[in-house]
Image (cartoon, rainbow, N blue to C red; front, top):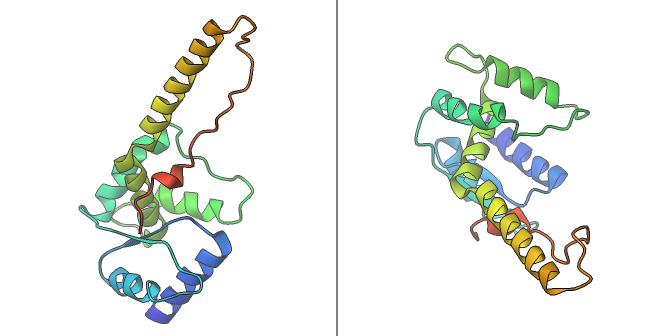
Length: 161
């Protein structure tokens, strides 16, 4: 994708999907995109540069365990899912395109580095322990009551930009 189209597409996708964070590879055209998008003030884009420590194939391979473990959910009815899954299935040294695969791999790596799942497991464990403690102290405690607190938003764990 050439520069004007890359910039336009990044902005259009941000406006359409309103993500809380934009991961942009800090290499090649991504470097220019990062610098350019940081100048936009309306809206201010939440850009997070990411470094690629390995090649695209190695990054894709590193993401397969998360996928195979069933920790990735895709919306069945979304118009883009079929093409996305097809590209993932064809990823490899002879693949014609790997752009979505590479973006997906960066996203998986970002979440793995921050151990979001471990954070939620620890949060849930603490909630269960606290609820059990409260119910033990209360004569009318019921194990089926809803908890008063809600889990934290995973995006609040993202580094500030």
